[in-house]
Length: 97
Image (cartoon, rainbow, N blue to C red; front, side):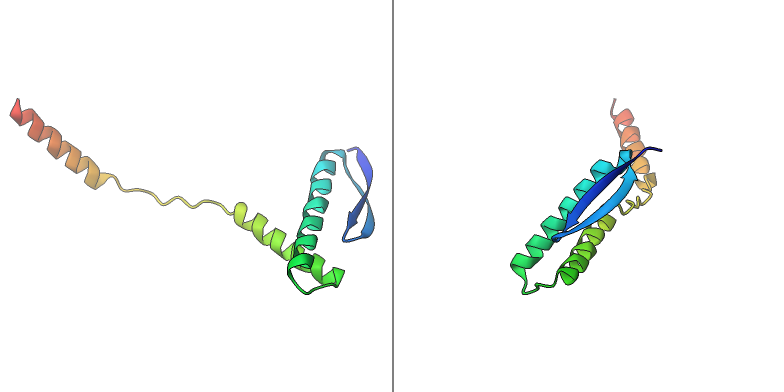
């Protein structure tokens, strides 16, 4: 698998990474999302420590990603009562003719 070297900057600190070419866009977008979250937190809260901001951003982003990927549980629907009502209605309509 082919790899690409990236220099990702998060909260002003640069990190050299080697990632598969297929993941380059994902990693770049993830870094951009982290930087946006860090800046939002910096503007809205009295926190200046980059490590705290990165940790808080990671927590927020992971919580969001986890909730978006949560499986949708489908509850089986019992149509028995509806089918009985439709059959009864059909029988009544047949009797009218």
